[in-house]
Amino acid sequence: MPDADQPPTVHLSGRGDVAAALPQLIGFRPRESLVVVALRGATGLRVGLTARVDLPAAEHRGPVLRELVRSLLTDGPAAVLLLVVSESDDDAAVPPAPGSAGPVAELPHRPLVHDAVLAFDAAGVAVREAVLVRRGRWWSYDCARGCCAPDVGTPLPGGTSPLAAAAALGGQVVEDDRAALVRRIAPVGFLAAAGMAQACDQVGDDLARRTAELGWDEVAEEGWAAVLAAVEAAGPARDGGGQRLSDREVARLAWGLRDVDLRDRALALALGDSAAAAESVWVDLTRRAPAPLDAAPATLLAVTAWVRGDGALANVALARALDSEPGYTFAVLLRSALDACVPPARIRRLIREAGVPRDARR
Image (cartoon, rainbow, N blue to C red):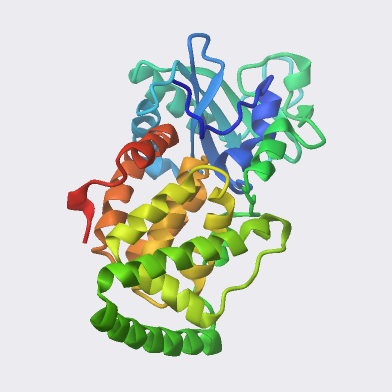
């Protein structure tokens, strides 16, 4: 049965399309990076898992490549595509051919590409092609034609790509770099943090009194109603029209999500039409709730980002949750799942069918 919550299928027609789509594939505009794209399906033409690392120094190349290979193998690729994103100038260290006037220019980072090809070959995965992306153009490391000469290259496709359009429709925001992702969910400043701390103290006392009077089940249902109201109010958030939550509303939601049953109900909001609005609420709570109250919304943000294919934001949000509360079991389990490169489709199925296991709750 097809996955009803799968993102739309987008066709990339060639290497240039993949190179131009890297910001959407990894969530930000890569710089000085090695990106590996899994190619899946019977024909090896379907884009799968995409992994990115900073260009490693020569002494660290082996361990970095081994980890990349391990990650990509979890996706069962038929082949992979290597893309080096770098503004480095051409190398001129290649000895000149007989009769040549001087050294022959060479594309940069070829030793890294060579070692990467060998690493994937040793794992039984072919490298379909290795590409350099630089200054709005791309080159094939394997091409000997004049159009692939170091001083030529092929312009990246212009305009809005189908993948960029689909990503925008799904609520993805492509940041300029990874640091911008971190800043997007960075804790609020001093005065705002002081106001939130006071609101959390007051709301915590109120909830303790109401629980004593009404029982936790009643208070938990009030918390779930507050979550749904916040998500509904954030519905137009992708168009800039969402309503800002008050400090007390943030505090109420953050305290409510400490209850594992309410938090697990909130997982379902990662699926369907409310996913983008829910993500905007989790971002707001992650920024404004003090530790450790930010751990639950940060982990929910990681889940929501991961199921729509935004691994970069998922990892940043999960790091935030674990920094806030290293022993938060749900975040620890999700960290293991992301490290094992569990596909988003499998996470979606788990949310629909069973949610998180009972022994993950705390």
